Amino acid sequence: MEKKIKVIILLLIVLVVAGIATHLFLSPSTVESQESKNMTDMINRSVEVPASVGSVVATSPPMTTVLYMIAPDKLKAVNFEWTDDELKYVPSQYANYPNVGGWYGTQDGSYEEFIATEPDVIIESIDEGGDGDASTVEERQNKFGTIPVIAVKDTTNIEKIGESILFMGEVVGAEDNANKLNDFNNKYLDIVHDKASKLSDSDKKTVYYAQGDDGLQTNPSHSTHGQLIDLVGGVNVADAAGQGNTTNGVQVSMEQVISWNPDIIITTDPEFYASVYSDSNWGKINAVKNHEVYLSPQSPFKWFDRPVGANMIIGVPWTAKVIYPDQYKDIDMVGATKEFYSNFYHMDLSDNDAKQLLLDSGLKESNL
Figure 1 (spheres, rainbow, N blue to C red):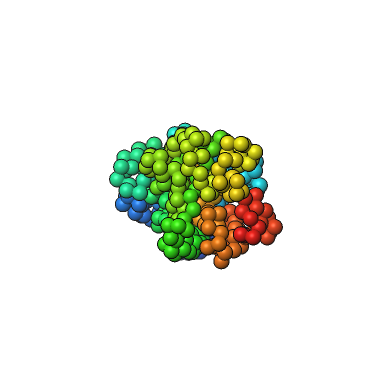
Figure 2 (figure 1 turned 120 degrees about the vertical axis):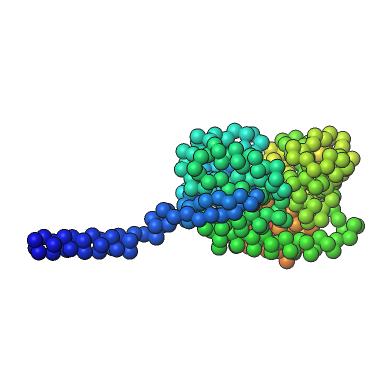
């Protein structure tokens, strides 16, 4: 009997020691994956999320863009298709995210495809006010079941984007990268706020934002799509269209653009840019006569617009250099481009690579 008791005690000791060893040597990520924490999202919902988020998807391109910048290894899917030219600026390990669509204009999201990516959390964009989107967020949550949905204020206003960037950094455990992105944005916002405030009316240049392959769609002042013109102190000629803040833009005539006769033309359309200098109608406009037409760099995201979001952060100094090169001589555009691509697009550019990217946009070498 005494022998049996000793054997039992010995077995108990072995089990206890094994349990302690398992706990001690279990990797931190494994322990954390079994834990959760409560977060308050940006419409004050309490959401239970994993203590350590390892994977994430977003329901719209602007949110996905931020996640790609600050936590590309945790991003499981995108809402768009990259072109071959854009993929030249995407590291191979990030080139094959599945496209799951989303709910932002095309409204082509698939709940099944989102769920199949097995994300720890899903980021849902809400308008700045937020109240009108609470029901949509709850609908998403119901559809996604146990996968937590976190509401984040939209990132379409470049001057208010910081709060959302920092919040998403907290959600996915990428606070350092989020802080870097926010600091980069604030640096150039501070510069343009200062210089734009000192422009006299006589110093201000008129600008036309040409959209579409014919250049005859545009967005007026105060539109999110043309906000960089307003930000740096340019005068958006299409404000005379009287359309207010519009998402889809407005159609204008060639005669209207000729009458506006802008000093500067900015476009995001390569086809329009390729043809504008050989078109006799556009040749009547000062911007074309003076070779002041500029194409937003395209890859891996457009710098000026579409999507409207964190990709436009590098567009702030670019637009400033485009419209007011003399006032922004102190900005090293080659250096800024290299810094942004390295830190947020995960692609190291040489001086020549960055320089060519800028020259291809129409910037003069003397203005880089």
